Image 1 (cartoon, one colour):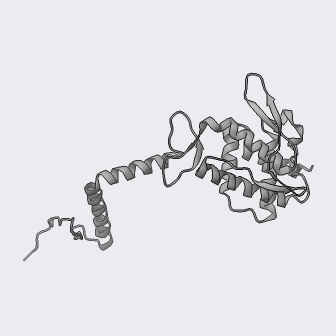
Image 2: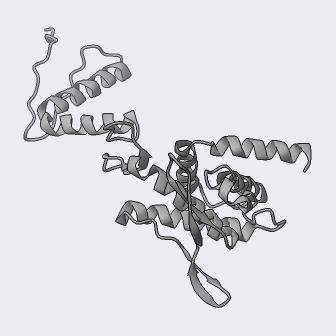
Length: 237
């Protein structure tokens, strides 16, 4: 391995992270990417996949995970198949609460893209599924192990316009502050329509005064439920 490739592997490992929350963030963000098309994009994701499986808690029980079969000179088909499988899995998890493992044909037989050989026990810690098989089977075995680990903390954002999956701390209901603020703002607008309408009109009037350079400009409100405000300026004879 060249110095350059060692650096690329290290950078990939840093992007993936070593803690479960970091790895979940990488895996979930991974599904939001556009489908990798260029050789460079595929190579970057290949190295990240290697890091993901090689740095998990299952590695000590299944050393072959450090390679995952993704070290092949031409692993693009495997990378793209895993990408599509993870993306479909998270889509299903949000819609039906089930991360369905993709199916593939192996020796003429349709099988799930994960092969769990057993469960490794680490005293004082959680059980860890151990998998073998083809590259995608071992990768999805690692995905299963991660989801089992972070499952109790996994939530769907309460913002109906987001519904992003995230790992919660305490009783957090939103994946980020922006979602929480958006929901509060929409609730306020729904319960205070008159105040919101007045505020919007005042803001529009302010912009029009600035645009026309007329601080006394009055903008007439339209609509049956609106009322005109008296002009502050007196007409000169």
